[in-house]
Image 1 (cartoon, one colour):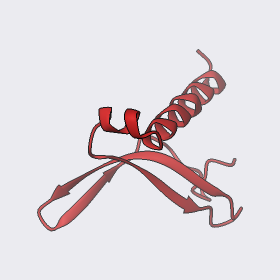
Image 2: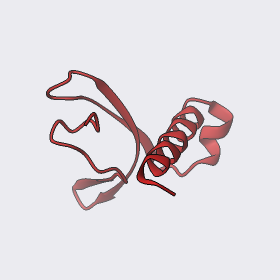
Image 3: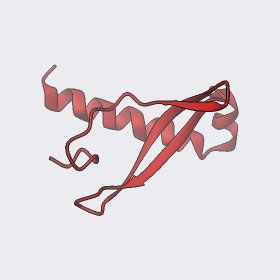
Image 4: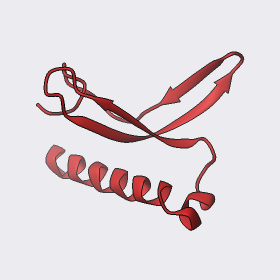
Length: 77
């Protein structure tokens, strides 16, 4: 699998998870700590939405992502 194939595979999985989060029947089957994280790229202004997991750790909330970001933070490079 090439890096481009891996990126397409990751993008497909992300779209499937985000779709499931917006489908009531499928959302109930997913982990309760699963949510979407949306932000706007600093340089491009592009809105990015990613699946994320979260958990409370005392008074804090810890967010886990499985993505690597470029300098703009939106994977646009």
